[in-house]
Length: 470
Image: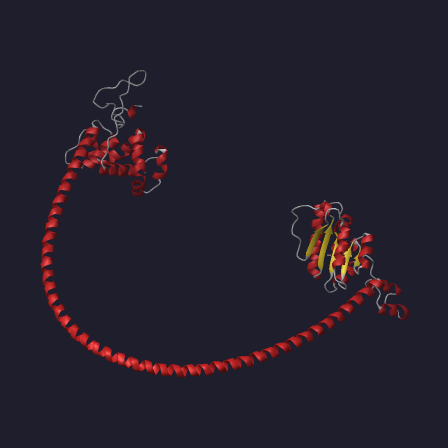
């Protein structure tokens, strides 16, 4: 590429290679491009100036013209871009002639007469050598290496001159400091002499004061011995008083322990009496409850459908609307009112044979829809009545990922090899005697089995009518 030959990239329209020799047209010729000149070693001031100029010019370039390694650096502010991305910018300027030429096209015109002078040839001697070297490095005009060498020599001369001046100033400063230190030393010597005389006077005063302190110390030791004797006497008196106090405390603690033992014995006796009374009361209530439960099972009593007043009214009185009005008092076997009466009992537990209800109530939908519909309806009944509700399904149809049941509703699946009927009977047998248990199932065997254990069996139609009414 032509921008890698000779002195590097030059401004557009400059067709003269370094040295002034005309180059043949690269198209259709076998001309050999000269070897690229090596990158010069720039001193630190020139490197800093080149980085600052390139960082400022990058803001004027389109993103597509910025090399990929510098696109992240281009997003920085100019000062931060030069400070943090300086090494990357210098590396890319040396490796990418096209990028350097684009930077030069933005920088050189902005420098005015100095940039024009550098393009035309070596500038005047009064220009800043660092600026000349930076612009020559970016623009690469004819003789740019010589310009950089001249600028480097000028910078070095300035650095050497500055170093010499700094050494001379350092020598002068050291001489002034030495003279000042001599004067200070003389003043300090006079001060030390005065201080020595003062210390001698203070030493004499301290010796006199020490003699006085020694006398006071002897007097204080005498007073200390007297105070120690008085302290020993007072300690003996306090020890006797403490011994008498400890004896009184031990006596009082013994009396307190005796009182606590007596109170503990009384509390134990009262506790035993309360336990005996509680046991008698529990046995009495348990006997009454078991007797009532056994009597109900023995008589196989169903919820009352005809009240005593209804019997008297049928035999000895007339009802408005004729005798057929008495039929309105009797509840049908599948009347949901019977279910409401049982659910109104305290602590009632409603156990449902799930598929027995769903397959007779809504068989046209899938099993999953049947389960969801029944469980959702039971949530409403549980919320209305406050009863405990348990829905039992056969385990063969159990599925994973069922939705959570509503509040107050328990959903169970029988285990493998066991039907829901047996699980329902287990639930009934697990309940205490006397608790109202309602079992919903059309299966006669299930109904007879739970009835023997004191539960109230109702048909699936009763629950379905209750759901439809809700």
